[in-house]
Image 1 (tube, rainbow, N blue to C red):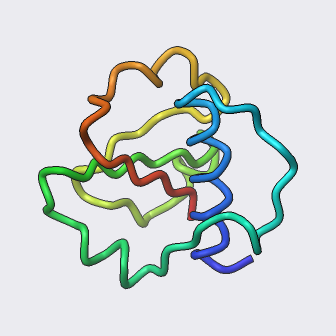
Image 2: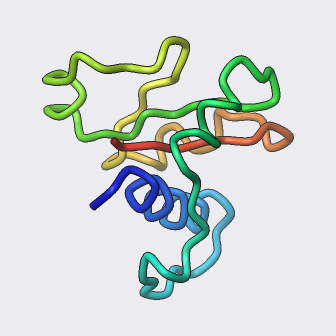
Length: 95
């Protein structure tokens, strides 16, 4: 699975949880995608919050982290979903 597909799947799942929409089974073809280049162009934008939702073991093992990104546990969305301002763009990533 490439990074844009990983990002898009996470975005689709988390968007449905955060805004309370029922989640239907979606394929990578129906979820909006974002390339690494597109995400990189958003770094430093104060209106965008990068949220790393990798599994804890994957995050701990990784030497690659986006500076300034928030780290959230994807298995516990209800504990953190409401803390982010609704007027900001949240960019979730797991790869």
